Image (cartoon, rainbow, N blue to C red; front, side):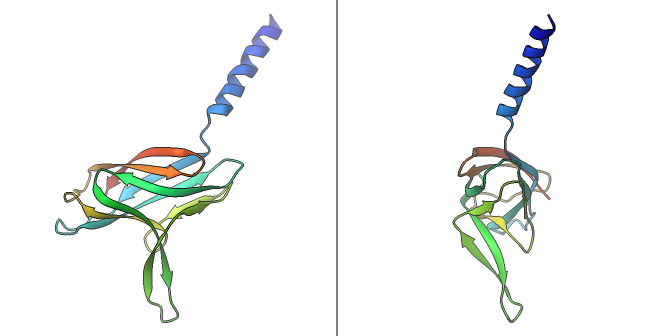
Length: 139
């Protein structure tokens, strides 16, 4: 009887580990902008708890015509500029923060104004982990 219980416990734990998602998305949010603005930015924390590196390679949302991954660079004159990138590296065991003034997601050509408190559905597309859908609150 003890062997059966131990075997079942092992099976449950093993299956749970197999189903664990290596990518965790924490606190996604969308910057509130004036109603006349056609662009906004999305921020979040992405944690790669897996054993292999991954990449954020794309973003989709019904809220805008375009959604791009951007980084922010500062030149020798302290002037910041955004640069569209093809992917955002997510090293194994690391946390990557998408923050104002750093890496972020740009939503361009919004279909309608975003409102504070509203939740925007966003699909994050990862090279190895597939698509993860998140709800990002406008604030």
